Each structure stands twice: as structure tokens, then as C-alpha cells.
Image 1 (cartoon, rainbow, N blue to C red):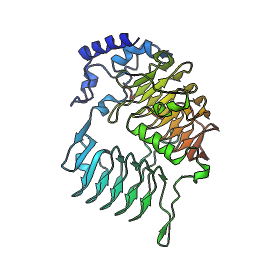
Image 2 (cartoon, helix red, strand yellow):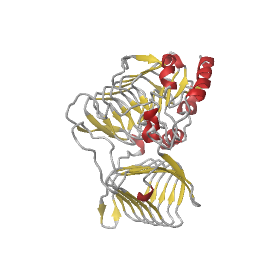
Image 3 (cartoon, one colour):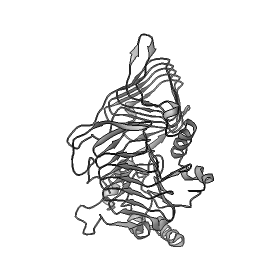
Image 4 (cartoon, rainbow, N blue to C red):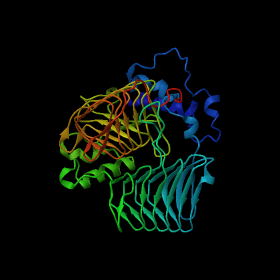
Length: 408
């Protein structure tokens, strides 16, 4: 199989050049990469990676290629950052600020303001649809996520939440922390690593934070284990390799098949032809499986970049119309714990969420960004926290939250 893939890759490099760096977004449409809605083939059948080589090589698994082709990297004297072409005017960076390989994503008309002598850690992601403002001298740790938008509504007929984020002067946001829409961090505040900030709540001069973070004796993962998982995901290092000493998982061979990396045994990884993936800017997601376990992903699901879904200690089954956001991690084996994971139809896994062995998520549910999840959860629930719990329910719906026509 590996020889077959290598031969096919040679063909791909000859006839299907990488188009992510194309300067004209319309090139994708001219060359026929965008999915035709009237295709006769059945795109809902779940088939193994071995049968998907044609789709992989033609780029049919790449979601929104005309958007992914807009990513550029700027390299000022004080560092480097990724941005989308055409949004340069919305990004303001003060004198002396250092950016260490960060992502600064703006929607046209939004503002991303970074003060003077601030520091943005490596692989930090900051997204602005309305306003994200970072004060002078503030520090954002490695792998942190700041976003003033949800990107998708909780139910299809609703609108996404958009609210400004303000990080005060000389404040410190710890590594792998998630800052959600509407958060206002006062000046001089220190946020611990792996926190989730939801909003501001101050009493007199001492800030009191309603961020979702359990006490140590309630945590599903020890602080050092959680940080190790988040670091490996952010740096595209296979998480299962770090648990090889437990007797399960272990090092898996990896095969880069364009917009997705397959780890382990190719025949045990299956997904529908309508499943799509994001590649840029942080690299393809990883779908992995080791015998006797299988990973199956159903129709019209998409998986974001730098995400890992690993069936090394149990089966992973992901329903149709699901969304798995960036840097999420689905683990069927973690230390000495192992078990199956099932995501029902229409489940939305938020950015940087960690799903642990033995978890079942009911249809239509939403897992909050940064959550650490284990257990069985009912359908149409909003699940957040560490350990995760149901914080609200949402109206029932059918179909997908995201558009079904904007894939390739």
C-alpha cells in the first residue's frame, strides 16, 4: 500500500501541483477543483483511504480552497505572522511588538489592534470579526486562541455570536489558553495556562474570573498531561507517541495524502467522499487508527487544520454533518485509559477541545472550545468545562449547521 501511495504521489506532483500558494483564488474554479453539485457519484458511502486515492489526488477533500489560497506570511523585523491576503489594512501592530509565527486572521472591516512592546507566542491564533485589542506590554503565551466570534450558530436559523475582546496592558495570558467572545481582561492580570476565559467579572480591585477550569482534584487530566497533549497538537506531533510507554498506542507510521495525514493502518481509516479538510496555515489534520480499531467519518463532515483523531485504543465513529474545529483532539487511548468514542450527527467540536476515551456525544450537541470531555452526553446539549458538563440545551434541528455547498 505504501508503494502504491508513493507512486500516486509522484503522479500528483507531476499533474496536480500544489495550489495553496496560487495568487489567484479563481484558479481553483478554472481548473475544476471545486465540487460540482450535480456529480453522479455517491459521495455519502464511507470507504477506506485506499479507495479514496483519486479524490485525494484531485483535491476533492480540500475545503474552501479559494480561501486557503489567500494565506500569506509577513516577516517584519520583530518576528513573523500569517494573515489572509486583502486584510493587511485591518491589522495594526505597535512598535516593538514581537510575533513568533502567529496567525492573525481578520474579516474585512474588522480591527485587530496590538499595542507597543507586546509579545505574541509561537502558534498563537487571534481572529477578529469585530474587534480584538491587545494593550501595550501584554504577553500572549504559546498556542493560545483569542477569537471574538463563534464562526457558526448554535442552531442553523440563528446568527453566530460576535463580541469584542480586550486584553489589558501588561496582562499575561498563559500558554494554550482560550479567550472567547466578549472577554475583557483587566490590565496586569495573569491567566494560568490551559484556561478558558468567557467574560469579565470584577469585584473591587480584585478580578474574579468565571473561566471554566476545575480544581486539581476534579480534573480529568493532570495539568502537566493536558499541557503535553495541547503542545503536541499545536506543533503537529502525534499525541499517541507520547503515550507509547503505557503499552497501547505507540508510534504510528504517517502518510501525507495532501490535505490530511493518515497515521497507522490505512485500511482502518475510512470516510465519505464528501468529507473535507482544512490544510492551512498550520498543516493538515491527522486521522489515525491501529488494528483492530477503526476510524469512520460520515457524509458532509469537515475537520480543521492541526487536529488529531486517533483510534488507537478503541473505535472512533463520527456522524454526518459534523464539524471538528482546529487543534481539537479525539483520543481513544490516554495513559492507561482506553475506549470507543462516538459523535452523533451534527455534532460541533469546538477549537482545542479534548475528547477522552469512552465518550458518546448525542446528535446536534456542541462541545465548547477548550473543553476536556469524557462520558455520555444527551443530544442537543452545549457541553463545556474541565471536566465537561452540560451547561444548556438547544432546540432540536435536522441537517447541518454549516453550508454544504462551499466544499471543493
